[in-house]
Image: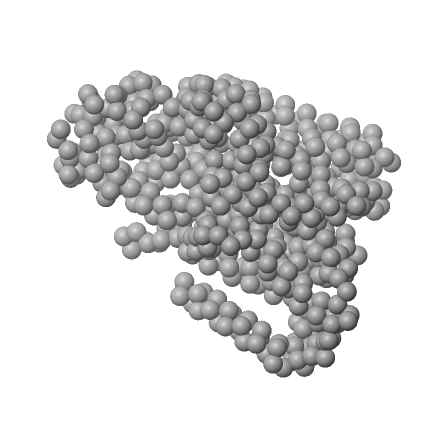
Length: 561
């Protein structure tokens, strides 16, 4: 199957090159081809994008002991662990029988994952429906991008096609969606709200469904509340005819959802806020968080190019009275501000591209950028150029295609080693997944069901090992999450990765196996006395001496020191 898909991709690539050559050596063919294809070019893009996503999903799967495994990003696997435990009757908990801790921030997405666990799908394949769901929402988003771009540009096909191409080709949007994060559905909701609000502006109508959709976004991702409030305020201010109704409906939906979430959280988890909030925000100096947020945002802008970043806003500011353009700018800037407030994401080192917070509003940015591109091309006087081979429209079309390709390249960092590495690897940690699943299965083989394992990868290892785990980084441990962050400056701040306490995680909880360590040197004083080292396929693990939950006969290469 994989070979067939790759063969199709190669054939499509060869066909594209052949057609490109014919364009230049046979002008009449170019004119005929473009005339016949232009009507369906959007669907060609959709077809190519679906094929690309299928290849992406297959390339992130792998075979272990003759079985093909599909898996998600480790953070998404934390949500899968909660989903699995829910369907097995343990409740929304990370560990069966463990203390209830809200170590996720995507309630409805966890419930959606749980839905798929109701079917007889084995653990090797259960990630595939989640990945395919991401693909469906991505394709739906492309349709919405096209609708919005056509609406705001008066049916300008260059603007709509450009916005779709930029969205489809931007790696972070595809990566996070196909790796199991809820960004696919959240991004779809943002675009759906923008589209419906465009209709409200045109018709001066009241649409209560807008706020219900925003409310669903809050249930999917708790920090979507920031966008809920921001976008609702814009709608209240922008449509004066329905100001009171918009304000009343937005307030009612917001308060209802906040009250329901808080009540559930209090009775189920005995807390008013999710554990992830305490881990990433509490105990972190506000100034450190803001400074890092500004720093990673600066890197994001520089990586893209400040000129490219400013262009869409220049276009929008020149037409500031246009409420539709203002909404696109506002949605992007709102999320950019939130990104700064939380200090960015933990994986900014991955090419300084749009992180999980920004990728959901990048399509709005691309629509604005496409409008500016179209305006620039229209402003350039190419009528005096000798175009005996191509008509004027063909020259504009060629310029537009070249410009899109250059922008796509620049959005990923331009000419740099990092860009080439991104295109080759198609993301981060993909090559680690096979190793971590294999590691989890080996940990399962060398332990009894009563074993307790300390981990850093808090999703993949617990899910595939089926063992009680101790979360060293604190995503699923309230004691760790409520501590002060161990940082000395904003440069040390890495959201979700600055809290640990080995006197507690190892000294008090006494795991049978310490499978991973974060800040290893701090852990050694608690390991020297009671633990011995062993090696499992390149992983150094620490085994509690005389533990009855370890199958000692199954372990090889034990260090006797």
